[in-house]
Length: 93
Image 1 (cartoon, rainbow, N blue to C red):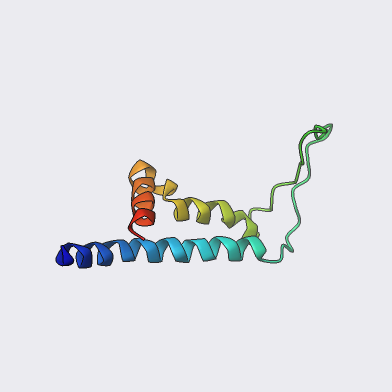
Image 2: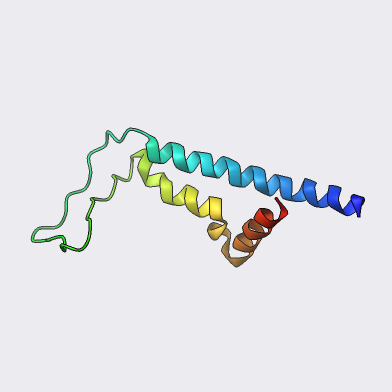
């Protein structure tokens, strides 16, 4: 059993490192000061009272990368296999 434990910890350690790095990168890009101009809402658009509407970040700003890093962090970028590996890595911890 000890041999299996060592092999599994080495394998899942790589994935846990990936999850840690992409999680930190996601937070860094979310906290990065946004100096790029934001896109304006289309003419005639009215935000519903029950929602909080925010303009999308400009494509060249750091905040545009938050979603990408989140998808890498959760494994969604790699499909169902990536999500399963992310869940198994959490269980391995």
